[in-house]
Length: 226
Image 1 (cartoon, one colour):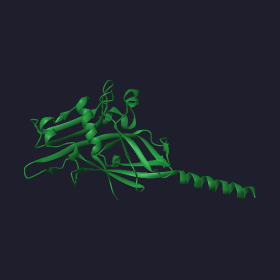
Image 2 (cartoon, rainbow, N blue to C red):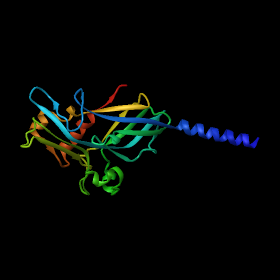
Image 3 (cartoon, rainbow, N blue to C red):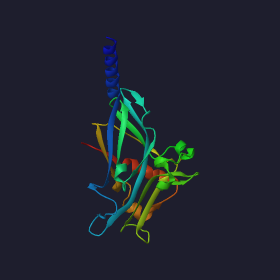
Image 4 (cartoon, one colour):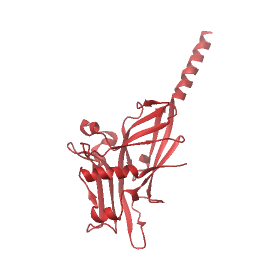
């Protein structure tokens, strides 16, 4: 009889554990307008103009999920570097207690992370996403070339960061997962257009322009309906 109750208890614990932890797979895809694209490939804008991207990288982290009005941030509180030159970085498995009604994450890095000196994993300066202690992490790095760029070599570069008020560049994005697999598209046409390439093909320091760019970047990430 005791053995029976022990087995029953173990089964109950296992079933509870399975019910509590739900996994949501999050994928990121790269687009320019309605066209899916890849790095180092020219995208024709019209009969004479083109654009190509050599680097597209950005941080996400500080995940929180909401289920039945309760918040849970205990399972994924680190940072991840989305790097479109590394396909393994484009999929993240988010674990939550129960099936989440909504999930929120930070695009970029928060102020505490910028001054904490962690420097490991995705935050390792060897990833090329760190300036210095007084300016912190590069939250978004986009580089490439275009016939529309006003620079002499037709290149552009946007290294967007800054954690000090009033020009913070980290932004929170929330979404409602409609299944256990969620895909986002980053539409770069929303953050890099002809006007920007002509008048400001480079942003490489914190400040007002970087803050405005990070606002546009958040608006360029869309959940793909599946």
